[in-house]
View (cartoon, rainbow, N blue to C red):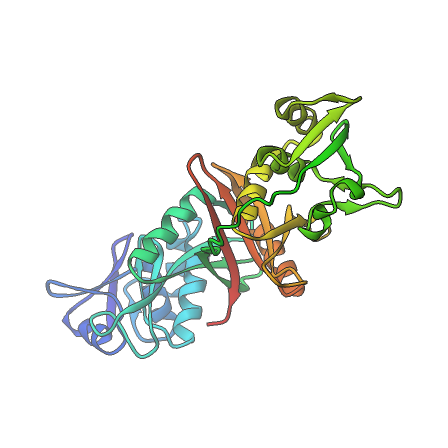
Length: 335
């Protein structure tokens, strides 16, 4: 069957309806079937249709004025070859369960296509994941590298358990040496028991700035400098001069503690925190705090997920908003 190309989409006559009925291609309209560019190029590649005045190379050339077209086509082709029916839509593609198709069955995935150097806007991701959840769909990112290889990531909001952990009753006094805070373990044995700090050879416990700030906020740590009281505001200013990410890190640390988790530095994994959950001696999560309005390259997210997978952990990006924190999980999946 022969299609015509109007510069934006392809159109088949009434005979094209069979493609919709058998494989879910296109959208029926009066007198025939309209194909999205990705559908038309795929069907031409598969020798299922002909296109007036165009071969495959010619049609691809005409469609390549859209810089993102070819990578969307690669994703469309890959999913079709894997046995999925799909339609174009506001999230690039709406993918149906195997065996289902448009007009017969329900879609399972909403797919957004990204190149390896594309920036991923986390505010937009949070909104799209929420939309997918309201539609009872799984939200996927299909990442396309420079060699046309595809990697699929499921993206979801990870609802960490609300453990309702209460601050303990122990009290400690620490001495601040710049951003460094030291506490004598004999004066606060509960610190180690609750997972705070690092015991030094000198017989003192070193608290990280986020630990010190949280303990001050919960009324469990009095901080001194040169024997005189040091306010939380003054200490925060000192510590923030050495860490430009301290604000969002402190917010996420406090939230994780309130949820009953035990966050510790994730520096050796390239992220802010490794996170222990109740009763476990090994961390199962990596968390990276990011402020509102953050966008990260897809390649950076890919590196984070691969590293987390290699050490058998989940990768969470903690998006700090003015009114809450949302933990966005990226996980590689096989379709």
